[in-house]
Length: 308
Image (tube, rainbow, N blue to C red):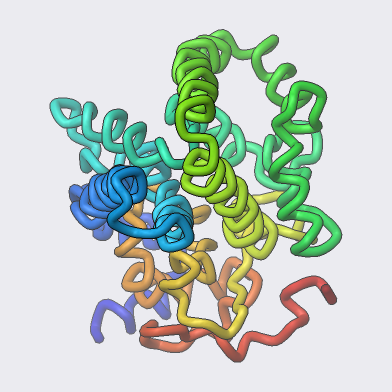
C-alpha cells in the first residue's frame, strides 16, 4: 500500500519504469507448457484420426482449439519471455516458438521480424504490417483482411518490402524464415496427397480460422481507430466473455506499454501501473478496477471502440 500511495504522488516516467521493471525478467514457463502441450495434442489428433480412434469431426474441433492457442507461445518467444532474457536460454525462444506455430504453418523468424515492426510503428499506415487488418472497418473485415494482407500483392507485403529495402537485418530475418515457410508449403502438399480430408480439416481450415481469430483479438479490437504513440495506440476493450478465452487481449494495452513484461504477469502489472496509465491518458485506463480477475473490463463503454 505504501508503494501504491507513493506512485499516486510521484507519477514520473522514471518512477513508472522503476515499477514496471519489477515485473520483468522471469522465464514464462506457462507459455512453454502451452506451446509444447498444444503441439503434442495436435500431433496426437492426427494419429488418432488416421488410425480411426476418433472421428474426423472430433479431430477438427481439437485441431481448431490447438491452432487458436498456437500463436501466443511464439509471441512470447518473440519478446524473449521464454528465456527470461537469458542468453544461454535463447534457444527456448526460437525452438518453442517455432514448434508451437506448426499448426499455423508459420515461420517464427518471420513473425518476430514483422511483429517488431508492428511495435515500432503501431497504427502507422505506411510502416505497420498489421495496419490493414488492425484498422479494418469492422471485425468481420479484419478477419478477412488478415488472411489476404500477406499475399504477394497484399498491403502488408508492400510494407514488408519497404522495410526489407531499408533494413538489412529485417531482410535477413525474412529470408531465413522463408526456409520454414517453404517447408510448410511442401509439407501441406504432400499431406494433402496422402490424406486429403485430414489435411483440410486438421490443418488448412483450422489455421485459417485461427488466423482470422488472431486478426480480430490481437489487432482489430486493441488498435482500431486509434492514433500513434506509446500511450495512445492500444486500448482496453471487452466482448463480455472471460478474458482468458481471448488470451487476455482485453488488457493487451499493457503489452504495448511494456513488451518485456510476460503475458501472465500483465494483470498484476496493470494493478501497479494503473495510476501511471491514467496519468498518460491511455484509452479506458480509468475504468480498470483496483484488482484484475476473471474479466474486469466488461463494463468499459463502447466509446472506446471509436463508435464502432
